[in-house]
Image 1 (spheres, rainbow, N blue to C red):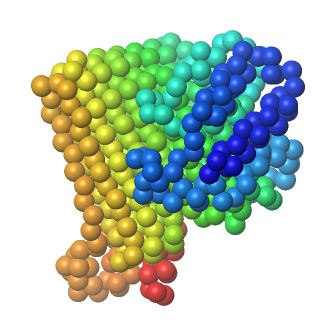
Image 2: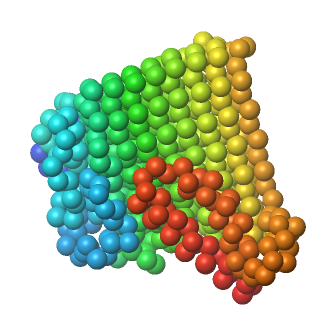
Length: 442
């Protein structure tokens, strides 16, 4: 493990040399501080509480190189077509680098700024350094530290006061590399006071290729802002996806986030929200569908720091074959956060006797006038419901499809963008078809 740790430090030296004149920017001091901190810690092992049920050797077996930067022309619009969404402001990133020719930004409304992070850092290097230099979330994470050290590109979105962005913004990250490589996208989303924004993230890659995506997305939402966020993790089944998502909420702000995790050999999602303004509201939902030997970790933290703030959390999973899932969610209610109303639930369906779920919803409450609840369910499809449907002439496969679809639609139906919801429903059905085939041929 120590040699793997040092390898990242050596890769940083190569990355630093590639920056040329950009190494003199203020942001590079943030990078250097991050790699210095990383040298003092270690990559996670099974001895760490947050990783104790994970085979962390999976993350260090491949030698992940720095991603190539000059093969963007090898990726065509046709290659990306399964992931492109119409009627959106679309930024495409290949191996973590902005691909202007593949993007479709169009005419932006007044008060809306959408561009690559690399461009922002090149043109106005001092403008966002402070935001990027803060820790994302309150839990130490060595992969977030690595992301900060290798921070170069990603998306910068800024919605000015009293502005409505009337088209969804779609960030499409696509990985393609002949050898295992690692990209570190960094996204900074700022929605000022009295704003509305819909943001979609999609992560995908070329089939049968091994790569690591280590992303960080940070939302800073001002007072009375409305932010709807959707994330589609569609990585290849040979890839690794590690993500840290953090939202900071102002007064009377509403932030909702729905994550759909379909691909990836190993996926780790750290999702946190800091409810720092009185009367704000956060919703964090997720759906994960696993096959084969897929493994997913979902760690969530909702911090209630001010009074009168509701939060809602529902994560649902369907697991087949020998797949593994871990859910650990925490609702943390500070002493000041009276009149908190928080709900957390994790539900799972196992399609195989060999699939496993480890679930641990948690409440940590220091206020005395609150309404908080949490729960977890792990089970199989209801035999009585299957029999009822089959007794009415519906095939076993179709009966199973109807029950699983109803289970998944509890999350999918909450998507407000019609074209995105239809896109997600198609992806879910394709996953179901593979799960059915695996079960019926076992």
